[in-house]
Structure formats: structure tokens, C-alpha cells
Length: 145
Image (tube, rainbow, N blue to C red; front, side, top):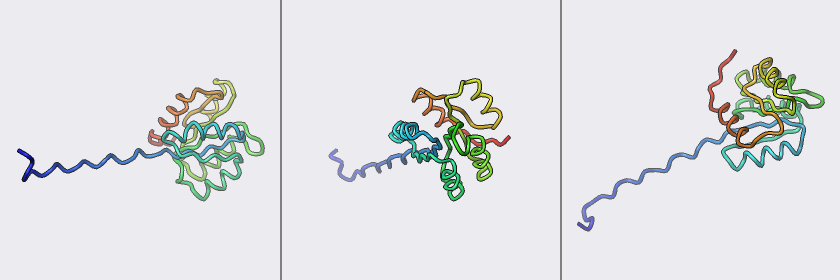
């Protein structure tokens, strides 16, 4: 009646925290890198943003499995998105890559098909669409061509 002799039900442990999606952003624009970090980090993303494709490749060569996906600017000085993408896939053939650019959508679709990237983002973009695309790409199993 008063709970004497009654054992309380064991507490159910809380669910484990949701896995954070690890994103490497490679873009020569300081403003864009900061914007992406500010938009994604409060959510379920850990973002490392690097302005130099060469420095990003140096890091990626040491930490090939550290990221779930890469957000890659296509038009950059010194080493463009196409060459950077080729090096990324040589270092880790299973890395998922989303290209981003201010190019028109038709051009982005052509690039996505030509380089077999996992998606594209056209600048300027809607935050919700970018978050959904990154989540979808990160959660989709990699399928080689």
C-alpha cells in the first residue's frame, strides 16, 4: 500500500546523444566559412572550415577518416574545386563531397554529374535546404560508381 517491499522499477537510461556530423568546409571566402560554421554548429554538426585547399588537403591526408563529408567551393584561386576533389578522392575514395558555388544551377548539375559528387549547393542558399542536404548525404551509404 505504501510501497513497502516494492522495488522501484529500474530507471531507463537516457538515449545516447545523437552522433554529430563532421563536416570539413573548404572555401576561400572568410565570410562564407564563418557563416557555415555559425549555421551548422548549433545543430548536430562539428565544422572545421579551411580557406586554403592546399592546407585542407594536407590535413585530410593525415585524417582521412575524420570527416563524414566535405563541403567544397568549386571556384577557388590556386587550386580549384575540380583538382581539390580529385585529390580528396585519391586520399579517400569513399569521402562524400558536396560542391558549392554561385554558378547557375545547370552548371552545378553538370559538375555534379561530371565529378560524381554527392550533391551541390548554389550560393546564396536557404539554411534549411543546406542542413537537410548535408544530413541526407551524411546518412546515405556510400555507393561507388
